[in-house]
Amino acid sequence: MLVVLFVVVPAMTLAMFDGGTAGHVGVWILLGVLGIALLDLWLSRKILTTLECEFPELLRSIRGRTLPVPVKFINRGGELKWIRYGLSMSRFFQCEGEVIGRIHHFEAGKIRTIQYPLRPLKRGQYFLESFHVESPARLGLWLMRRHYEMPVEVRVYPDLSVERKRLSSVFLMRGNEGLHSVRQVGKGREFEQLRDYQHGDDYIDIDWKATARRQKPVTRMYQIERTQEVYVIVDHSRLSGRELRVPLEKGEEANREEGSGGEFMVTTQLERFLHCSLILSSVAERQGDLFGFISFADQIDRFIRSRNGRGHYNIVRDALYTLEPREVAPDFEQLMICLRQRLTRRALLVMLVDLSDPLTSEHFYGALPLVSRQHLILVNMVRPEKAHPLFSGKSDPETAQDVYDSLGGHFQWQELRETGKLLSHLGVELGVPDHEELSAEVVTQYLNVKKRQLL
Image 1 (cartoon, rainbow, N blue to C red):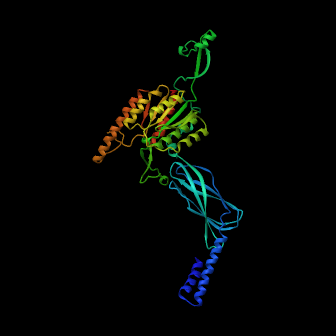
Image 2: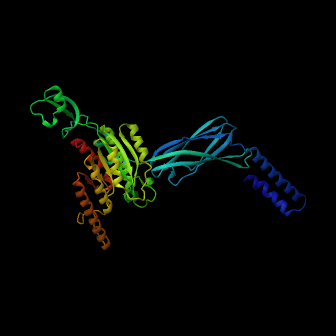
Image 3: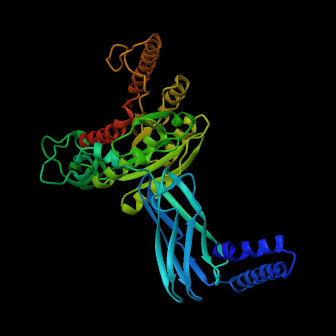
């Protein structure tokens, strides 16, 4: 800018408006400036080729939390006066600091590491594509730029902080072993040992094969089952994409997802299903049970065999964080056939399925007998916003449209109630909690099943 102001502009003035010697001098000055600029460009063309940038291959983050992206600069050439750097931004990320950063006096042979802060706005798998660096030429007449390929995979997982706060500490932090004794209802069906028959033993507990071998009555002893199989089955077909309006908590304005606005954050029923799956997985791990995960739409696409441990929790989390609703109808018959073939041991099946559509609930009820006798099944869904009894006090209609909306919600609630009665005939419990209570409701059902030894 200074060269243009004090050299180029006066030289052009002389060359344009003076046809004599001064005009020729102006032309020569312009040619000299152009030559120096071209020489500066030639000498500085490789000034950034010796600057290396290293990036991590994989980053994991939680939606709404700051993710520092580490970038390592290695200067294998001469000293750089300064460099500016920037990252190609995706609409699913928000920069927490300066979009364009700057490093002053980058000496030769030195290494600098910076943290580029990003905030993921949505769950899923993303890739950071490119990184850009800029530095002045040797004489300062040009700005040299270089583009770096940045194949960084970013895995953004659901934020479970709100659900964990809503759950009681008993659910997540305390198992059956502790300072307080927990009464276990039920006999238990896990084999422990054989012993001689004693007066008062039930006849159904007699082991007739051992009795024949020993020539005297022998009784089988059982203990309470500590390790049970729990599977969460998530439906991500078309009805799982039903939108939910979630009131924003204090301090959550910066964590809004795409499509949100006003006083509510717009999410989907599938998001609540995934949050519930991870919460239940954490609880099952602390209870010592084996946890598995299954997702399906028109077919089963993810099947994770039940196991335990922190590593298994990470496997489940990596399997579900990319799930998105699909515009297809669920195929319950194929699901039940697959469960019948793959799950040979009796297990607790927690199905997160939307049964608000009468045709969908009819197909679900027709396919359920394939597995309902072998496994213990709990079905849960998020209650539709208007699905309440007409005179329950959940809404106070002010206009005629509100009255019709309340009446339609009453009919929807009645249909869900009838569906629950049909499922109860098969020994299946249907839960329809509000979206903020889904995780707590499912965890409570699971702990009740474990306490009563229903498996």
